[in-house]
Image 1 (cartoon, one colour):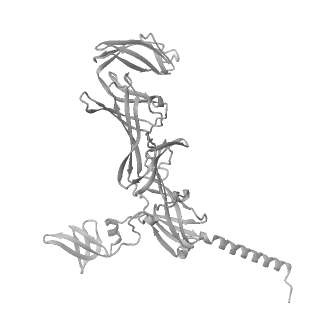
Image 2 (image 1 turned 30 degrees about the vertical axis):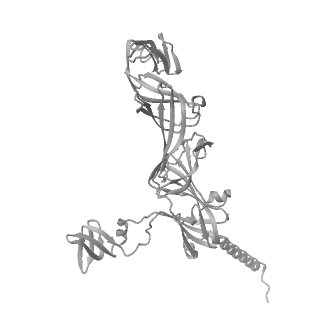
Image 3 (image 1 turned 45 degrees about the vertical axis):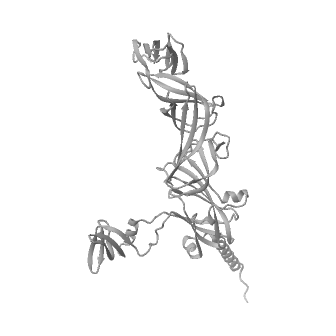
Length: 506
């Protein structure tokens, strides 16, 4: 036998080595097969629905991880955005499985889905399909063009049945029956032989899952969805002398996501979370905010904590968030919050009216002292007969602790303001940069027709590189570079006039 040459031996070894590498690559790559290969190897298919109580929110022993898996968590932002975490029990076979994960919201952001098998790290979702082509009469008619259906129509003597091949449904229902074309107009109902492939009754995530182990295990699914929003509303009862209020807060949660969340742990977030706009990426997300419960029974109300650059509030009890439902939950009780009623004249807001304001500081000293979410405050007061009357409302922004809160209630009926420029002059010209100045002598007459003495807070704004306000007959408080405050006392059924000079130079 002829001994192979060194060159031939080298070629043989190289070919054998390449073949071994190819076989190893095929073995390693087997779990990550192509779509066609997955369809061929998937032998186990099942439907996972929250309608099955044994698969959803099952109460287990007080094990921390088990509790996390078998409960649902909903974190709601007030920008049409929510984060949902839910646990379900899933029975997987070894190898490839197809799982239909039902009862997801119709506004789910499918690209945000996170799947976690809490028992086996190597369980993997190889493919995910979001099926949302929900069944409707129009879609059934589309699918049954050139197919036989039965139509029931109202006639003088009752209901008449028509059976034939569907030709059109745009202007009534057109059927081909017995060689004739029948147009059915007064359609009462339509009978279809079966539900066509491709149409589903509820939005569904279809997963192709590879599992190295068979048997039941707990899976945790996390996703973002639109259709869940919340807002805060406050009710304030003012006492007799307008020095304090009892404040009650509510959160209103609106669920139009297309799914219900039973027995959920509810969390709310306060702050402005950035999300990618729909013009850049099609999703269903938007803004943020949150509340807090004051009271002895904190286990039933909201508890607040700082979270990243936001505030997170957790409801101390479970709640049900049904689809197409608006729910209100108590989030704040604070009694005897110190407030101050002020009469404010600001010509930049109104030239001849005085605004009525309630102001306080969001501090413990005043009876508050917690982060307050953005919302509308409605204010009420009892009249002389003890009947509660509405006296105004305003909206506050997200307010951290120890910051000022001002509520505009309306314009004072018995206080009149009249602002005049009594004298005006100018120096310099348009080309004289830095030397062109305007001078004004201003008077603001305040007339009080109430039977009590008041103080009117006058706020004036002047802009320019160089501004000087002086010669005032009341003390000037400079709030910032462009804002000047005067406090003018006006006696009962009397009047007072504020005068000052302003110089603006450019």
